Amino acid sequence: MDYIYDGSFSGLLTIIFLAYKDLENISIKTESKQENLFTDSIKIKTDYKLAKRVEIGLSNKFSPRFFRSVSLCFRSFEVDKEEVIARTIKGMYREGFSYLKSPNDAPVKFNAYVKNVLGENHDYKGLLRFEELADGTFYARFRPKNDIIDLIYSHFVDRMPHEKFIIHDLGRSLAIFYKYGLVDMMEVDDFSYEITKEEEYFSRAWKKFYQAIKIDERENKKLMASNMPKYRWEFLTEKNLK
Image 1: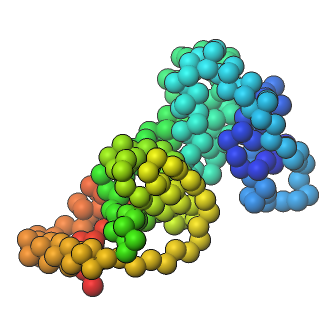
Image 2: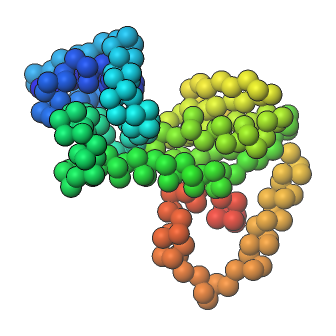
C-alpha cells in the first residue's frame, strides 16, 4: 500500500500515527514522487494534532534526543528516508532502544542518514562563503545534499548578530534572510545581486594568493575530493580561478 503525503515532517508523522500497525510494510511517497496513479494508494492530509501526539509519544517513550534524530533523518536527501524512519520507529516500539543499535537494515540506514546530515551541517559551518553586497548584506550560496538551511543559519546568527545576511540553498530554491534579530525563510528561484568593489578586490587577492602557493606538480585531486567532496567546491573562491 502506498501512502501519499505533502512532503512535510508533520505529514510524515501523521502517516506514522494512522498506519502504525502496518509501518513495516507500507510505501511512503510525496505527491510529486507518486509513480503509478493506478496502484493502491491512500492520500493523507496532514493533521498537526496527530503529528504533535506522535512527537510527544516518541519523546516520552524514548527521549527528546531520539525525536530530534527522527527530524534529522527526515532532512536526508535519501529517497527512502520516510520508510527508514517508519520502520525504525516501529522497531523501537517493538524491541526498545536495543533496536537502534541492531544490524537490521532500517536502524543501520537511520543512523547513517542522521550522521550524514549532522556531518554536512558541521562542514558547512566552516565552508560557507559570504560575499558583501552593495547594500551591506552578506550573501552566501550553497547547494547541500541534505535539507540543512534552517539548521545552519543559527550558527551564523551567533557569529554575526548585528549584520544582515542571506543564506541561499540553490538546489531547493530556499533562502533565509536575517536582519538584526529578525529571520525569514522563503522560496527564491533567482537572485540577482552586485558585490562591493572591496569584495571584488579581496576575491582577486585570494585567487592570486592561492595560485601563488599551490604547486601544480603536486596537485592531487583525488585526495582533495576525499577531504572535501567535489559538489562542495562550486562556490569556493579558490576553485573558481577564472
